[in-house]
Amino acid sequence: MSSSKFLSHAVNRIKESPTLAVTAKASQLRSQGVDIIGLAAGEPDFDTPDFIKQAAIEAINSGRTKYTPVGGIPSLKQAIVEKFKFDNQLIYTIEEVVVGVGGKQCIFNLCLSILNSGDEVIIPSPYWVSYEDITLLTDAKAVTIESTIEEKFKISAEKLEEKITNKTKLIFLNSPSNPTGSVYSESELKDIANLLKKYPNIIIATDDIYEHINLSGKPFHNILMVDPSLKERCVVLNGVSKAYSMTGWRIGYAAGPKEIIKAMTKLQSQSTSNPCSISQAAAEAALRGSHDCVTDMVREFRVRHDYVMKHINEIVGLQCIPAEGAFYAFPYAQDAIDLLHKNKYINEPTDIALCEYLIDKANVAVVPGSAFGASGYFRLSFATSLENLKEAIKRIKNAIEI
Image (cartoon, rainbow, N blue to C red):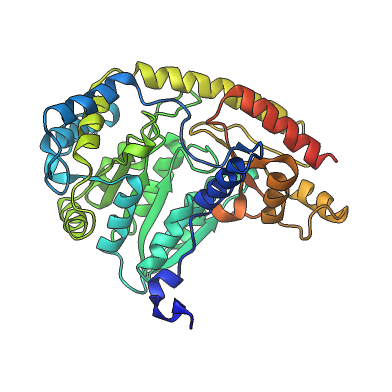
């Protein structure tokens, strides 16, 4: 007898994270001796800086291995308050900050704290894979707004207003974007902010996790920075994973209205309780320390980005626009897909079939665009060595131009 009958409606509404699934398949093939180049995972390939690791070692040696307050130790929360003031000119108290087990938990806690069955959540597409599934867990409805490569993967205020209804409760904005690397300009954010002022019951979640992976050199802005009047209904989401190469340390944080932060903390108290005490000490050191490590990493990402953009666009059937942030390329591949399907190299003309073909034929793991709500594309992470990227793109070219 199948045990699936015991599963909840909530868990049946969601799917496995496709990026983690592709990464797992690549790891499995690699363990079998297959020479797989993995370009699926969204994490820097650089090691965590030594001064951050040393702070963790000191925390262990000094016995900071016990429970902490659920929402984070006060000194870390104060460091986050100071980060917002220094980097973003946003003023918060520690009561308006919560630390979670990664940025994903903060998003999860936010959604479960504010959404009810029947509420609508607006998610610009292409989107980070978990926005939609976390929304569905709450029994709210995910309402996507498609954007294309011609629109530089950004929505306008006009397109946003078309999707707003009296059920709209939350909107996600992610800039720099995963998966596209697109960045909203100050003027674009002002237009969206001016629109949202007309709808005071909508909460705005600005996901700034890639804030410091800035490839353009232009100043960073989020929607609250361009319009501080939105503060009472804006939640700013961030973390140390991407900027400080600390993905495995699992520290994210959020700042927002006190009642929402209090609710998120209460929810966390009944799930994970506090984030790892040692990771919190490391995160505090990261936020208070030198940013030279970030500067060095971003400089290398720019070199890789430029190489990838040049050579991806030389492959027949692929089209890719430059990223302004994060460490992803998001090529439009439908022309290549159609050609491979016509010549019977893939069974169906989809991005999923293309990515399966690339991992089997070229031994390169990338993520299909449909996982991000954008069929006909795929995501390639350039958070790996230039040597790996050169070999991977050569393999992709050979597989597509067969």
